[in-house]
Length: 202
Image (cartoon, rainbow, N blue to C red):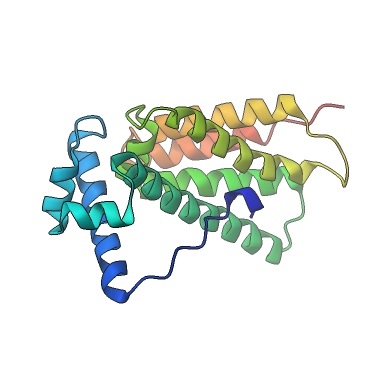
């Protein structure tokens, strides 16, 4: 995992505090999915969570902080999925960098399909100010780790390949989550198959 993607260590909290934080995050996810981020209110979140406004502000700075915390949890699950897929492929004898990037990209897309409603929340364009930039930046960093499979030690980043792959993944996620399972899985396979045809610049 890229050091920049490691979530900050959570502050120590009591079991009750941890349970309240979890309830608030679950409630926020439910409310955001139902009415969208822009229309959601803190009062709705605490009502669904069965918590108080004070408890929300004890754990989060506000609505945007809740949204970002949900995204961090989603991104962590995605990193775990793609990492595990590559580890299993390597354990099975796969060494080809193109195949490994394909496997990582497919695992990312399948994770998005599995968590379709959550993924739509982050890729809908309805988030806190500046979130679209953060989303693109994080996906670019994720892509860079996979494009790095092509590189030798100390070899410069192939910016063109990075831009093409990260841009393709951004569009791919937005498309697969709009399809039913069968179509989404077929599209994910087709997209990752095309990605394997890309080659780093000379």
